[in-house]
Length: 464
Ligand SMILES: Nc1nc2c(c(=O)[nH]1)N[C@H]1C(S)=C(S)[C@@H](COP(=O)(O)O)O[C@H]1N2
Ligand SMILES: [Mo]
Image (cartoon, rainbow, N blue to C red; front, side, top):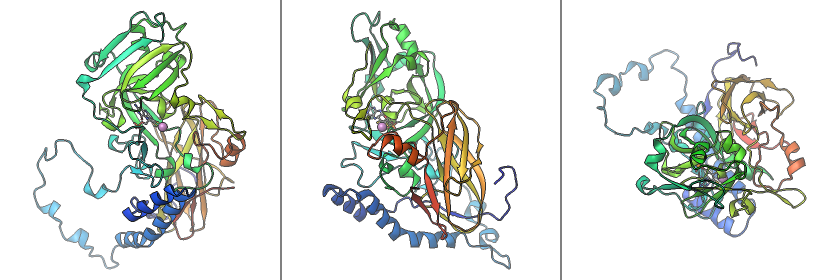
């Protein structure tokens, strides 16, 4: 278990999570069940599809990973392949490069049966297939309330105004060119939908970490601090204690953001993502990024910022994104994404092909600042081992953690528990349910458990 000791056994082999195990017929079944009102439709559809796919996939992976022939003579080494003897492709075969065709299974995916239309829906990032902390822009999760647009930046405007004439000196309208001439900053931050892990409040619902935790992504964002724009408009920071952010898509996404967050300089009006312009799915040409706050406040296609003196209680903060508490009341404006983590390897749907060494790896994050420690357990929380945090460790950003592990072939319950710089410790599901009940949707930051079975197959489980 020591992170600095050399691996004690030979390398283990890992079958990647089944990425596409629900076929077209499966999806139709799930939708039919959803319409007839079956409550456990997501779980049963996944279980059936995974069972159908599991046998064949495991056999394939074992065949690919066969040991070198005892007598030597591996043809993959001895017979020179075309790429060692021929001429490769020229430069600029593709003016915008793309991943290898051998990685085509690494895709963001919709959860079968979760939503009835693909315009008001979510796609999940394939966390189990990613390294480090940055999400490739093409794999960033998507959450749209009314579809996405590729907006002509020449026609996009950002207006800054006030709820009354005294909130700021001069209402302003910016073009994209205006904004991109202003002093900019670049910062790494995660965006997590408040509904991430929301399907898991009552029971185990989905099989892989793509679906349990994939409404989460992390990018380097570039833009102008909102504080700068409000100062330029002469905002009255004494009276104007809130801003309203509004998107240009048909959902008219509107969210109240407390002025303290803006004054801190952290709230950014963003046009850049991972070194290039935002992707259309993520708000091109302009979005707000409110670090540490649930994703809904990072309004895409940002067209207006209004300064006011009280929260607006818009539809997106009165009807949606509220927490149903055990006493039946709803809690409003619980926007911070509390400290959370998940082991991405090994995780649900993967198969450990043999005993031996494995690198337990995962992601930790906190909406309140930096992650200071991640503990990992392989026995369902009886014993904890401190994982190694990979650098950089940044505020309100994903942090990658690793721990050496030798699997002895016995069932193992793999968990991670993150602690942030405020001292907050990620809760167990039992602790969280004691306060929040089990009928909520939003803000489930409980410890995730993966069961490694004797067969090596990894399952999503809940510890009672
Ligand atoms: N204009 C607009 N902004 C929006 C949304 C939307 O539907 N329209 N969805 C919100 C929600 S709920 C989330 S979680 C994040 C998701 O950002 P992403 O699609 O870039 O991952 O965008 C937020 N901003
Ligand atoms: Mo969201």
